[in-house]
Every structure is written in structure tokens, then in C-alpha cells.
Amino acid sequence: MGIVKLTDRYSLNRLEEACMQASVYSTSPKLNSIKPFRNMARIKVLIRRQTIIKIIAQALLALHEEQRILEEREMTNENTIAK
Image (cartoon, rainbow, N blue to C red; front, side):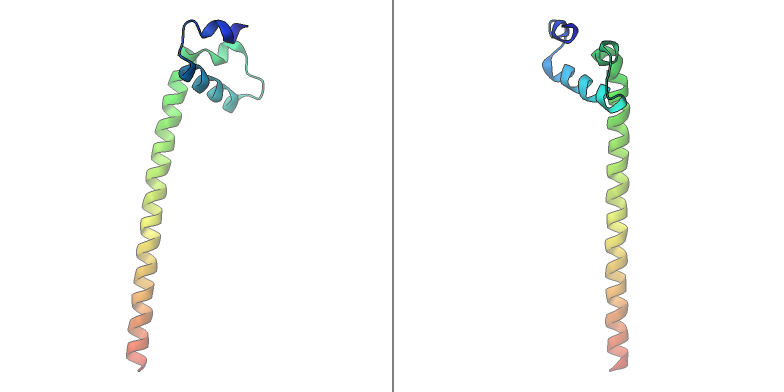
């Protein structure tokens, strides 16, 4: 009933985000951990972390692709020299 009462004060999207966030931290979250105003700071931190992780992943993929291209060029050059 406590969660249902929160729908009077918060949007469903915000409540859903808060519930998902609370479930990340606990398998049996309490009502206090679901209240959106308490979880919004945690959500913002997680979004920042996810953004940073995505940027790092993209950079690593770019480096991997660059390394693969360089290795292909070296192999082509070695084959050309061998002929």
C-alpha cells in the first residue's frame, strides 16, 4: 500500500526507476529505499558510471580495431616483401 500511495506524489516512470534502483541494492527493499527522492542521487551516479563505462568501451573497441588494421597492414607488407 505504501508504494501505491507514492503514485499520488510521483510519476509512474520515476517510481519505476526508483524501484529498479532499489532492487539493485537489495533483493527485498524496504519502502524507504524505494522513495524516489532518496534514490534519484543514486540513479544519477549510476547513469554517470554507465556513461563513463560506455565511453571507455567505445575507446577500447576503437583501439582494438586500429590494432587489427595495423596488424593486417604488417601482414600485407610482409607478404609483399616475401614475393
